[in-house]
Image 1: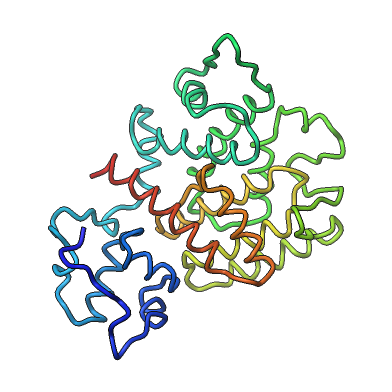
Image 2: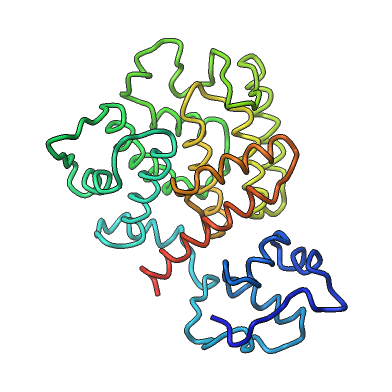
Length: 310
């Protein structure tokens, strides 16, 4: 991508930390730009060129080959393609990638191929040795519906009723939904936990969710970091008996779409980084780990966008 290797630490006027603040990323992300692990998007490249008072062309092999994400609205694209019901586009592959990865992170046994087959044919592909969990199948088809619902209402302000509806769509028809204490579409009745992280007690969930939403909806301008922070706080509350991770990730995707920020899908292969990032964020040790994990996931989704929209 770059014509020349640029060392962002050599400036005598601006430190790497200051560069990161101006560009709007973590210092570790600047280091990844230097090493080639990550490539800045066009907006970040423009900021870097301004910092170093050089032409944007210095950073690029061919400026015309750079996909300009500023010129597209991903929500509009997903809505149009969802309406068209065509295969092999961004909406189609978002459904499969998002559903497979978010469910697999939570223990679903269905493969990506089986997930794709369910979405494309409404049937399940088995080999002779395969045994599938019925709940995995139901939650897969439910998640397809959840994504569609999320796309339809993505422009609306986030609220408790919407979040509860997300949970209802995800869990309806599962064995969990047949348990009175499970409370599908409502906040948890019984205490739960996530590893060593202490979640909010059932009696305090309402208060904590209202506080979280009041903070978030009071923001005059929502950034990528704000969405990640909401996600970390939501997961620490853990308001539902089960399904909190998937609901939290669908909320993050929705809010990115609402604010015209490139969304992200946490991949199953990166779940250990994701869990570690959540843990460090929630224990107030380090925010950058989770932010960088989500930025890496965003970069992966950008590649999907370029593949289908370039």
